[in-house]
Length: 424
Image (cartoon, rainbow, N blue to C red; front, side):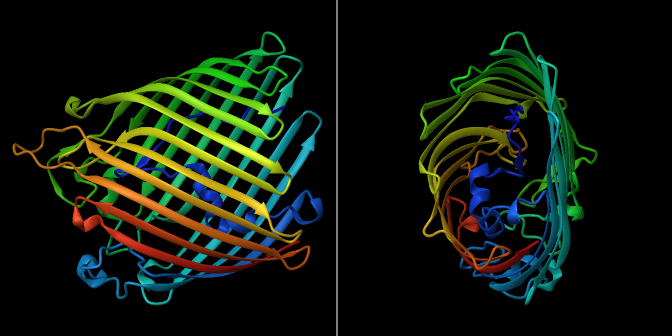
């Protein structure tokens, strides 16, 4: 038995909430990852080649050209991207312990905007363990290097994000159902583009609480989380590229008290929810302090082993590094499904709507301005076909739309991709 990660410290990249974990299921990489391990082997090697066409690579409004935004560095609005990937994965049990590990290298090549060509990697491991009848725990480590999202990053240079994450968590059982739990995690994020130096961060988080896990399949937790964020570089520009009137030290302390509950009303359904209060305090600029209630719910229906539908909704609060706002209130609602059409063909579908309202006042400007309000929509579908026990073909079609009261952030984008993967 393992203790699944319980962290709900949702990170925000610039002024945008991190997409929910469900969204990852509907990327092209996630689509072909749904297929089973090759013949149940403990060690699986894989290699893939994919191509995707981006109708609006930099997610720009129709009246802005890539050349104007990037000073001529980006040459084309649309692009054909080649993605070559090689990886290895391991999954093995040792007595009461389980080790899962994977590593991959990925090269992205842009046909027209080759300034963004990049070779990245993604590697990690998860170790689950039980000691006797009372102690259990999990260790998780992950390192990743990849291009920053183009949704809000319109840089004239390649901007690579280096993420490092370590989490250690443990539980002590007082009875078969009740446990005391705790965790320590470390996260580091660094941007290669100098204009984003102010967003480099190092966060240390701790969690303590109680867990109730009866044999019925329910799982209830009550937790307190504290996170301390440190920024090695002072922020000179805000997330929109505007120069701040003063350089800012973004060090903060964040506390979150929350509870989570998961129940299985039947063998085909599962309901999960969380409710909490988050408060963030900045060490050097108290005007940017914020707090509020956060919550989320997810309902999963499994018709059978071949079909699953999940609906989800949540509200989060996160930092916003702009001249006129200090935090962003993000609310999302969506539905996703994964089902097998035949024994060799699976389909993944997703529809999501996100609302992001920027609020607070850091006190940089004397005049009042309308706060930014964004509405984002995503429709996505992918198909995976098992050509043989070792070869998988997949295709993705994705539509994205953002409407904002700040016209420079409006965009429509369409992505179409195909991928072939071999596992052995």
